Length: 459
Image 1: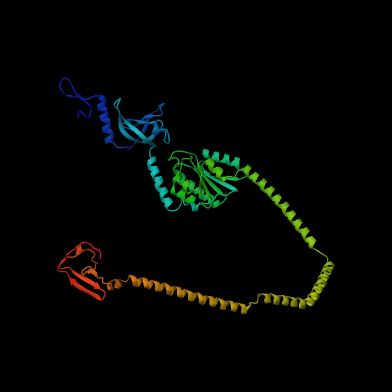
Image 2: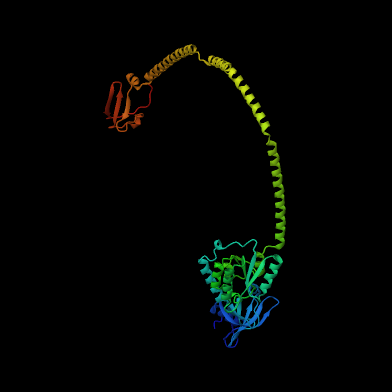
């Protein structure tokens, strides 16, 4: 053994390595945890104890061996059930050692009943298959009848769930007829019998809604409700089906196939049954609303009758009214014919006066236009004179500043023959340099043979 690994020290007598028990147990525990990965182990429960701390201590065994197990409170509180003596279970555990006593044990992380894992996997496979086929599509599901005349219950006659359902229905809706379609809810052949009862209920068409229910239990107890044939029968049912299987945490294939799922059988009974007292209150409210509506309708009819009565007159009175109306129309016609000419003449005079006021004075407007034309011509003439004087002044200034006049006074301009730049300093003149000289009557190219710079002097 490696002395560093076990924190050992050499003995005083011979130099052999001495290993403390705690180091040895720690090394063995570390080796076990590395060698055996987390795994599922099956066996029968023995010597189960729940400590005051909440930890579970028990052993699992088979015909040939046993091993101690510990499941700490942090894991045990999430377990779906508490194992009992003799239960067949499967534990998901890590092989380790309890170092203070040097005992081999399993550190359990999860626990389930034997076979539950395989059943749950089969449940998931069937659920995925039926879901892919659209059997659980919400669009396929139908609403429950608001006021059913008959309710069917598919369950076992010995089931406690049946008593809960019947009690709830009797309390909430004693006026609704209840028909029980008996079928076993667990055991061999129970799924086929449940399916047959669903088909029988649909064939008889005695009820408006069906309740498929049973009490809680393990996954094995509820396995009949995970049958594919039963799920397809629920989906094909012409009568809406409410599933109330197990407790609130229990889910089966029947729950997904049904038109509605209830958390418990009692909840399913409440979903399908209208509250009797609520119905009575609603009936009273509707009766009162109907009475109020009838009274209002009678009042409206009476008011309409009064209005029609006021419009109703005798034929003689009607003829008298028509005669009076005709005389009034004749008088208006006669007065209108006599006034028509005078009115037309007056309107003509008014229009003529309005036209005279708005008629334009063409002579005055023509004189005004001629005056404006003369003013415009005079303004143009003055503008031309000012521009001509301005151009003459500019030309005179340009003549004074012209380089040609400078040349005529005897001056010349020297330019570098290569760059064309003006020569301004004697220092830029060198023998052999070629220059261009601009004079008053032309220009010439020259070459310097000798240069004698002089200081700047006045002319």
